[in-house]
Length: 226
Image 1 (cartoon, rainbow, N blue to C red):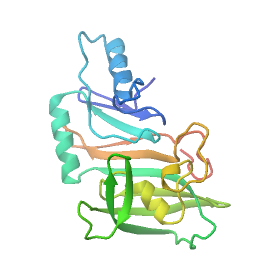
Image 2 (cartoon, helix red, strand yellow):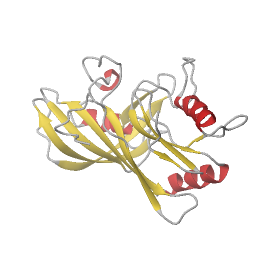
Image 3 (spheres, rainbow, N blue to C red):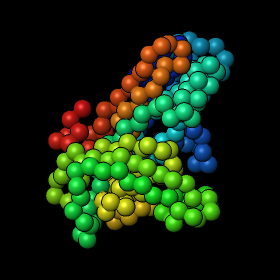
């Protein structure tokens, strides 16, 4: 294990697909627990290690995950998220449906989403639907390989499953994303969505930080070279 970024206030790591960021009903060890243990061992920390979750990735998603190591950092990073002062970039691979329209090279997708919390599923609804939330996603195509399409995605809002629904709405559901239109699962039960980059203000220094996570090995290297 090696962090992507470590200082007195921050810990950024590359989350593998299939691991929950925090404890859930499965009882599986979470990413937070793994890195609390790592910090305790590597830094010889006594007692319980403070490590606050700043943002979350869905369990089948991989990529940059940021933790705060101090309460000051946790509070200031939460404020940055609320202000919209954080830029998130994702890489993804979708499979064009046979009936999908020809996609342009880039665009912005806007839709209203409603979450069914009991089923942990989101659907696109009319704007006047009670409880619906507006979602806006900037996207561009990085490459094509047969019917596979490689996307770079930037969520301009922070809605649950927003990127997964955006790709499905473009006629290219993410590989392995059975919940939103993929026909078959991936062998590791992941979905082809990767948090490539986070750009945010450092909580105590007057500078911005960018953290990058390498693409998973099963992402086509011709599309995602780094």
